Image (tube, rainbow, N blue to C red; front, top):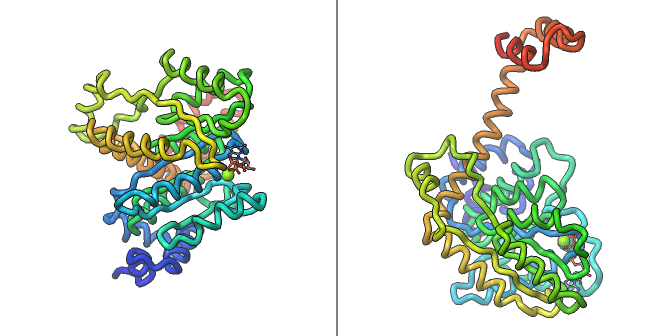
Length: 336
Ligand SMILES: Nc1nc2c(ncn2[C@@H]2O[C@H](COP(=O)(O)OP(=O)(O)OP(=O)(O)O)[C@@H](O)[C@H]2O)c(=O)[nH]1
Ligand SMILES: [Mg+2]
């Protein structure tokens, strides 16, 4: 039986949506059931990840971008997930930043939700994915996901998003070229924000050189095991035409400079993905990722519940006393 809360949330009732997200975030039975109910309503939203160093202007850029996207002829509805406890979306902002955030917060067709990075049962990426599905099902056309570019969260957002925007600034210095090369692999669009600061042309040139040198994005080709036949074939026939070269853009998020161009490139990238069968492929890769992760977790939990604890302990003792190797221990454990 469909839950009243889910129904109201899907009809656009913001209060119900807020309550539903809280249930989903806490992974309550109601929240988990809700995800089952909404899944068939998902699949339309354009998911956009925004990542970059702390303070690079991600939240400011997101606020400006939301306003820009809202001006499109079809007046899209937009959700923002800020995976970041220090985000101006959730507090700690300067007065000017606060005002900017508040402007979009008062738009009835914009929904902003922050997510604490600690203290939940499931992984961060699981909850971000779950939130994205809720917004997608509730009819939000764009879901913007802001994550700090520090380690795992930015990698997770890549598996989730159709379009990944990496935000750089002129004052980052060139001593972190290697890090940048790594981050370039996940970028569909590169933005040098704070273009009002000195050194912007150098930063743009650097990024452009790195893109030209082939540090560009590649699909995760090692994830193809679960794919349907159709997409297996697509993966095997990805050619030069299917390759998107990440453009390097300049923005001043605080002054709305370069934001229209950024919005345009986002739409262009979405069209590119759809036109080359890559939208579908990405969705399938993301689903594979989710299923594999949860399957791994579920199988492990079930195995642990069923395992003979005395034998398990004995095998671990053998391992620690060097009678067997880790590989041999795993084999023995799997045979329990
Ligand atoms: N000069 C200048 N300042 C900017 C620009 N964009 C953002 N800022 C300022 O940079 C500071 C950080 O901006 P945020 O949007 O909070 O950056 P963030 O990347 O979201 O920061 P975290 O979420 O803490 O990682 C704020 O004081 C902004 O006003 C810009 O284009 N030019
Ligand atoms: Mg922020």
